[in-house]
Length: 69
Image (cartoon, rainbow, N blue to C red):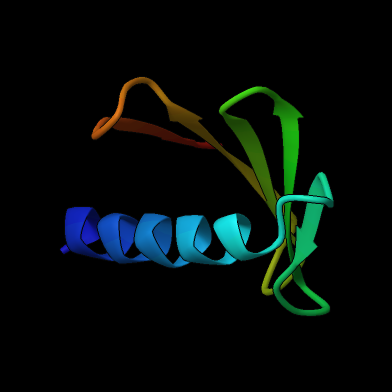
């Protein structure tokens, strides 16, 4: 189930990111922000229900690595 949610999140993220390539930061909501910290390396920060970060790395044309903290 977690893999499906992560895949859907990644697809939504890259769809939003490709539509807004000028900005290095995408604010999905008041509690959720995605920031490109390096080329193909993204920091996902959320504040609700508790503060946390995730790291998404595009490692190839079709490969994505996701790390939650």
